[in-house]
Figure 1 (tube, helix red, strand yellow):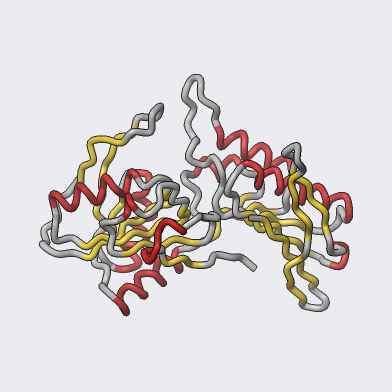
Figure 2: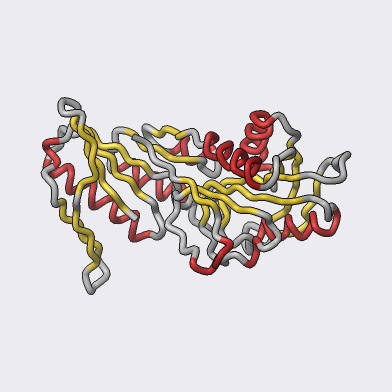
Length: 284
């Protein structure tokens, strides 16, 4: 999903700009700008990347802008950065995050704004990268839960990679953070040996699991199974910044509530009445 926004400082005007985006029968994407961009001092390409074709679309939009007006400042807002999870070299495997960041760097955006990247590797490889803070949205969700259902009194990090973001939210809420460890085979993606490091000294807790991405949901299914078996009185809620939800609702059935941002163009039709609470994320 691609959008283009323009700003005119003198007129204090901000608006979405029209462009034509199509894919020819041969599979080639094509972009035609419908609005005269030279009127605007500042442009933002808003890219909610759901597939590789969307990434090509970003390249085409930037090229079309450059050919109309090279003086206009252009930023890229790409909250979910593709390939960010493939950030470690394994012999025989592509280092996908490097491939994607090289493509974006070649477009020479003034700034590239991402949200909750999977690891520091993405921001380190991107030129002119800025990480947009989104913690206010997680706190909005905990406020929503407090008013409508339950007060969160513990935050769970489902693996070591989630520890920093989970600890940040726990500190903001003034509640403990519980660390879970897991093992994943990098070649198969299969998860095993999940373990809670410290046994909680309480009986009933409303816990918020905090992570950056839910793809198929295997991590969170394993986590809910573990807590149902070992801590059956826990009520689990889930926050993921980027909700792909490729396996639908079934892996998340044991969570009392799920929330995410609209950073990824997810198909949530399979959730029925159990759709996640979705928070809009946008930078002006």
